[in-house]
Amino acid sequence: MNTVSADKPRVIVLHGIWNARAWVGPLAWRLRARGFQVGVFGYPSVFGGPDVAVPSLIGRLRAQGPVSLVGHSLGGLVALEALRQAPELDVPRVVCLGSPLCGSETARALAGHGWAAALGRSGGLLQHGLPAWHGRAQVGLVAGSVPHGLGALMGALHGDSDGTVALAETRLPGLADHCVVPVSHSGLVLSPEVAALVAAFLRDGCFGAAAAQRAA
Image (cartoon, rainbow, N blue to C red; front, side, top):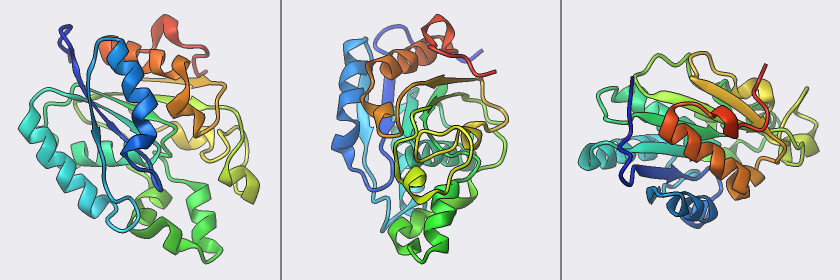
């Protein structure tokens, strides 16, 4: 089983599209308060996209040794794509927050309405998602269930969602654990409850008793 050092385990947090490093500051602060050594990975999500972010992340991970990853939205896709391209990396665990791992209907709707430029070079990864996960890292996903966001406003989503990403879009085969909390897509980064879930998975490889609602 993969393990993470109990003495100040190291974590890198990745933001999503249209965001910067400061966006994940509240989550990074809460993880530090829970005993983690936290770094933040910034990348040009629109003008660079995964073609820039993934090699840069791989280089950083190779230089740092054992470190887990936490990615919000697109950040989760970038994290897993980096591990898919470089499976030898020493990354024990990954937590994705509201990441459309199976592809985003909101992104496809934006592209279909002529707004593909807003997604930039991240459009392909967001629209198509990733194949089932078979990597060494244990991957957990925290999804939101409060439908306040761009996808809901556009009418692009069907079924339960966090307003930007449908719950079904987060259920990638191969996840070690999955849970749902009553927050919106943006709220996943700001919620103390989500931070507690992230910390639980990073330490134990499951959300366990910290989960507010375990997915059926």
